[in-house]
Image (cartoon, rainbow, N blue to C red):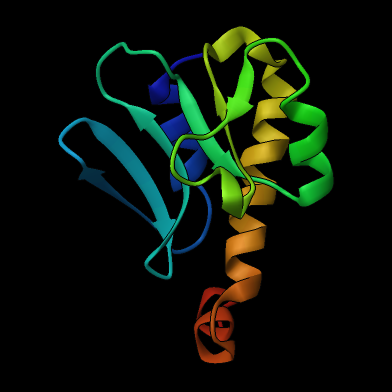
Length: 116
Protein backbone atom coordinates (compact mmCIF):
# COMPACT_ATOMS: atom_id res chain seq x y z
CA UNK A 1 0.00 0.00 0.00
CA UNK A 2 1.11 3.52 -0.69
CA UNK A 3 -0.10 7.09 -0.48
CA UNK A 4 -1.21 6.72 -4.11
CA UNK A 5 -3.48 3.86 -3.05
CA UNK A 6 -4.85 5.98 -0.18
CA UNK A 7 -5.35 8.90 -2.57
CA UNK A 8 -7.35 6.74 -4.99
CA UNK A 9 -9.52 5.43 -2.18
CA UNK A 10 -10.17 8.86 -0.64
CA UNK A 11 -10.97 10.50 -3.97
CA UNK A 12 -13.53 7.77 -4.68
CA UNK A 13 -15.72 9.14 -1.87
CA UNK A 14 -18.29 11.79 -2.87
CA UNK A 15 -17.21 15.40 -2.37
CA UNK A 16 -13.62 14.61 -1.41
CA UNK A 17 -10.98 17.24 -2.08
CA UNK A 18 -7.25 17.10 -1.56
CA UNK A 19 -4.84 19.78 -0.47
CA UNK A 20 -1.18 19.98 0.47
CA UNK A 21 -0.86 21.48 3.95
CA UNK A 22 2.01 22.16 6.31
CA UNK A 23 4.44 21.87 3.38
CA UNK A 24 4.54 18.09 3.17
CA UNK A 25 1.16 16.52 3.97
CA UNK A 26 -1.49 15.49 1.50
CA UNK A 27 -4.78 16.10 3.30
CA UNK A 28 -8.15 14.72 2.23
CA UNK A 29 -11.26 16.69 3.14
CA UNK A 30 -15.01 16.55 2.74
CA UNK A 31 -17.05 19.69 3.27
CA UNK A 32 -13.80 21.49 4.11
CA UNK A 33 -13.10 19.14 7.06
CA UNK A 34 -10.15 16.72 7.19
CA UNK A 35 -10.71 12.98 7.33
CA UNK A 36 -7.29 11.58 6.35
CA UNK A 37 -3.72 12.79 5.82
CA UNK A 38 -0.41 11.32 4.73
CA UNK A 39 3.10 12.64 4.13
CA UNK A 40 4.32 13.28 0.58
CA UNK A 41 7.85 12.33 1.60
CA UNK A 42 8.96 9.48 3.89
CA UNK A 43 8.82 10.38 7.56
CA UNK A 44 7.94 8.99 10.97
CA UNK A 45 4.23 8.59 10.11
CA UNK A 46 2.57 6.97 7.09
CA UNK A 47 -1.12 7.87 7.48
CA UNK A 48 -3.50 9.57 9.92
CA UNK A 49 -7.28 9.38 10.16
CA UNK A 50 -10.21 10.01 12.51
CA UNK A 51 -11.92 7.09 14.25
CA UNK A 52 -14.56 6.32 16.84
CA UNK A 53 -13.58 6.50 20.51
CA UNK A 54 -13.82 2.70 20.77
CA UNK A 55 -11.61 2.12 17.72
CA UNK A 56 -9.15 4.75 18.96
CA UNK A 57 -8.68 2.87 22.23
CA UNK A 58 -8.22 -0.45 20.42
CA UNK A 59 -5.93 0.85 17.67
CA UNK A 60 -3.42 2.67 19.87
CA UNK A 61 -2.75 -0.65 21.61
CA UNK A 62 -1.54 -2.20 18.34
CA UNK A 63 2.10 -2.04 17.25
CA UNK A 64 2.65 0.66 14.63
CA UNK A 65 -0.47 2.62 15.64
CA UNK A 66 -0.16 5.72 17.82
CA UNK A 67 -2.30 8.67 18.84
CA UNK A 68 -1.90 11.19 16.02
CA UNK A 69 0.22 14.20 17.01
CA UNK A 70 -1.81 17.38 17.60
CA UNK A 71 -5.20 15.76 16.91
CA UNK A 72 -5.33 12.70 19.20
CA UNK A 73 -7.79 14.52 21.46
CA UNK A 74 -10.19 14.40 18.50
CA UNK A 75 -9.68 10.61 18.22
CA UNK A 76 -7.19 10.61 15.34
CA UNK A 77 -4.80 7.67 14.95
CA UNK A 78 -1.50 7.67 13.07
CA UNK A 79 0.09 4.65 11.43
CA UNK A 80 3.86 4.55 11.69
CA UNK A 81 3.97 2.38 8.58
CA UNK A 82 1.42 1.35 5.96
CA UNK A 83 1.67 -2.33 6.89
CA UNK A 84 0.75 -1.68 10.54
CA UNK A 85 -2.77 -2.92 9.70
CA UNK A 86 -4.20 -5.13 6.94
CA UNK A 87 -5.22 -3.31 3.75
CA UNK A 88 -8.93 -4.10 4.18
CA UNK A 89 -8.90 -2.73 7.73
CA UNK A 90 -7.21 0.50 6.60
CA UNK A 91 -9.78 0.82 3.83
CA UNK A 92 -12.62 0.37 6.34
CA UNK A 93 -11.08 2.81 8.82
CA UNK A 94 -10.61 5.51 6.17
CA UNK A 95 -14.24 5.06 5.08
CA UNK A 96 -15.33 5.29 8.72
CA UNK A 97 -13.30 8.49 9.10
CA UNK A 98 -15.01 9.96 6.04
CA UNK A 99 -18.45 8.94 7.38
CA UNK A 100 -17.72 10.45 10.82
CA UNK A 101 -16.80 13.78 9.25
CA UNK A 102 -19.80 13.75 6.89
CA UNK A 103 -22.12 13.07 9.85
CA UNK A 104 -20.94 16.32 11.48
CA UNK A 105 -21.49 18.47 8.38
CA UNK A 106 -24.49 20.80 8.17
CA UNK A 107 -27.67 19.17 6.87
CA UNK A 108 -27.49 21.08 3.58
CA UNK A 109 -23.92 19.91 2.92
CA UNK A 110 -24.88 16.29 3.70
CA UNK A 111 -27.83 16.53 1.32
CA UNK A 112 -25.57 17.85 -1.45
CA UNK A 113 -23.21 14.91 -0.99
CA UNK A 114 -26.13 12.48 -1.14
CA UNK A 115 -27.16 13.99 -4.47
CA UNK A 116 -30.21 15.85 -3.37
